[in-house]
Image 1 (cartoon, rainbow, N blue to C red):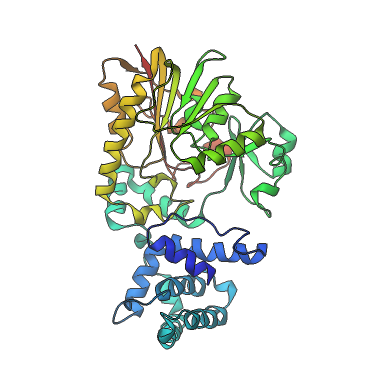
Image 2 (tube, rainbow, N blue to C red):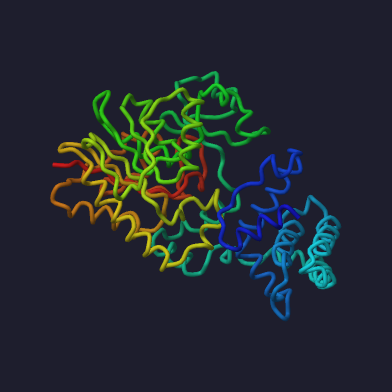
Length: 420
């Protein structure tokens, strides 16, 4: 029931927030509930196609938790068979009975799931093409070609845990059961404990950060002590990298709750930055900065391995609106860079309107010149550097000699500029 309630909120437009200890105390039950929700979201497109076959009259109207319970139960029945068919059927009907708005649909729930049980082998073969919205799948096929099937594999596999080390520490890497994949990024493929209980977390030896997200902050080549602004900083991974690099950092964000997380992370890491709550499109500092990092608000389609709901929450109109907002941020960020200073623009998006097109728009500004990224600047990730000297990662990229497989990076776009 907890899983269905959380899934129902996401279906209504909320971002996925995993169930926490305050909601389900037992760690095994909590892990199970979160697995049910994420499986239902990763298989969302397939489940939609499957339900269209099973519900002859369509989804009942004003049915409370019916759809969420059905999605959870079909995900369990078809794609988590080790949990047992009886469990999926029995618990679905019981959960339906406990919701006053859908208890009258308990017989329908039972009938639909029994039909799914009988046709399970066929239903599991529902085309993986349904995993992504059609408009997005077609767009990505044109942009990225035959690598898109690897996107589907990445979606179903989810994202491993990537962390950035505070200091080089081979012993810690071994304790984490991880491997270095680029610079100070360590990948932990499997773990049997929450992040907060892993070795080195409590005493601030590392922070969580996807390998692709760790690239932008590495592209500043400034003198020690240089003043750098992280314009959309929370929850603070890139700001922490900038502090580690020896810069004097201002970490700005408009969201008070997210800034609280940044402060908490910095206390754990024993890092210091000037933390500012302000609007990134209007913030006026006392003086310009030697460097500005703009991780602009975006569609976040590149994060679908860890946030599968984003691909169903986005639309072409939504992306167009974000492009306009990004240009507001870019225009203001440009004004905050001192002459000779560096601007790094990035988005965790797979959409060229938010990435490549914005880089061209910045390059058209007479006061900025592109500073191409060289492959040797990104050990282990040089294949992500484009002919223009931009960085384009995606969830189908291979980490080459590092031992990774396709589907190992979030989608990111990064470009670097210097103010003349």
